[in-house]
Amino acid sequence: MTIPGFVQVDVDGLWAVRQCYGRPESGTFHEDPCWEEGVPRLEVLFRRAGIPAGFFIVGRDMEHDRKRRQARKLVYRGYEIGNHSYTHRIGLTAEPAGLVLQEIRRTDRALRQLGTEPAGFRAPGYDVDSRIHRMLRRTGYLYDASVLPTYLGPLLRLASSYAAGKWLFWRRQFGRISYGRAPRTPYFPRRHKIRKHEWPEEIPDLLEIPVGVTPALHLPLTGALLLTMSAPRRRDLFRRLADKRRPVLLLLHAIDAVDCRQPIVLDNRRPRMAGFAMSGEKKETRLRSILGEFSRYFDIQPAGEFARKMLTEG
Image 1 (tube, helix red, strand yellow):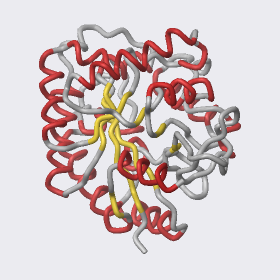
Image 2: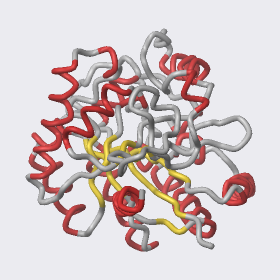
Image 3: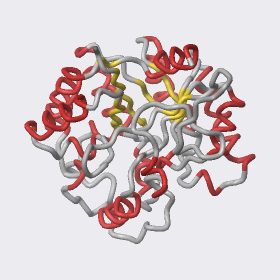
């Protein structure tokens, strides 16, 4: 029996990445290596490996001509395009309902103008709640991919603060501690407790595809983690995940394929964690290995098609 797997990319522009670490844009919206270097490099890797990846796009970037043209190329080549909010505002669950709905709908309109119909959404910083799920249902989305099922949110925020060199612990990133009890496989979330699975009497209308986590420590299965692991450890990790016989979402970010030998994210800081000091060539080599190893254990497929099938079959 083949095990479904999903590979997705959050296309956070460099301006959005710097925002996450408390840095100003400093012109990075227009001169953006995440779009100019990261997205093309990842697309070539996916195309050569035959991987039907998904790209989650921030709506504001579609105001930029070159980024919009690059996004249209992704649509033309058949990649799934997802909604990643309009301004990549960290802490959506703390914002008024009208603003959150605007973040979803403005991006939805911008993506539809590319010639695609987005089926999935991921909240910036994995910050999602039942209210956002209700808005996704109203907007017609098939699935959400924001839940991070780990208890390590506070420790991950501390690590982010350490990398940034400033106190960012207050930010609503890396989900809620209670989401550590959420299923680690795609499930139909309850309407008022999205960390719990529900067997609805009627046909379900939203699927949650949680971000993958490691079996033991429940660390997020992201490029920030995988780029720093040795090949034997990665292979062992994927084997142990496959042994559980459940679908897994591997999440990359555009910055994972960008040359970071110059401190473009953290100004004068260049911590060795999360690939912040790694060359583009080295990242490309490791990403090729990561994708090959993941493909060995999982049948990678578009999450939108998987969600449509799950919702149809109930």
